[in-house]
Image (cartoon, rainbow, N blue to C red):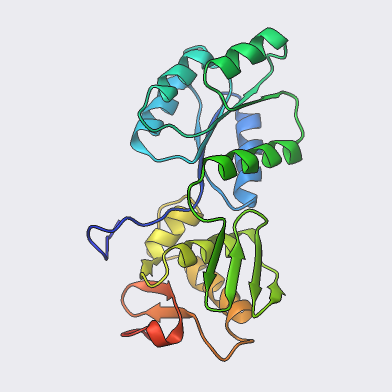
Length: 243
């Protein structure tokens, strides 16, 4: 991934690791979280989860206890042994009080028993992310405001209705105000996939965003940076970019 500003750290979209060996549940959870605008990795066992967690900065881990290679509590301990570890939500069929106590005392931040309603899982995920996220809950550039917790956007006081991916792209642009973001960076952070150089999916979503954010306003904030990608800033602050 190219770094257009050496020495500066780019803020990522929220990224979640789902540790679940049952493919049906893993697919259900990951698809639901992705639809809500999060980037998701899935690990089918404890060893893979630990490797991924050492290699990637996650904002949250959703952890099953019944893993094929190790007990989930052992995986929990290894994740917690890192100097910086994300909030952990246990998602398990073990429903006794003793199991819940062991999980919470072992370092988990929350415990949800299977079977579960996805709306409850999503609500708990959002609470844990809000608790563990040090970045601002409200972003503002000019008269454009994004509420990260309530997931609402307004411009000049008017509500702007965005789809989950549109919201995620706008949040990423606003958190990196004034910094050019390549299409590769946007795809990797928002869609959690490799950019193959052929897809125009970013350009399509940017057009959607512009129609909702910029077209109703005389000030155009979403800028095309030639040869790189896109950037969001106040118009007077933008130099060397095309429209």
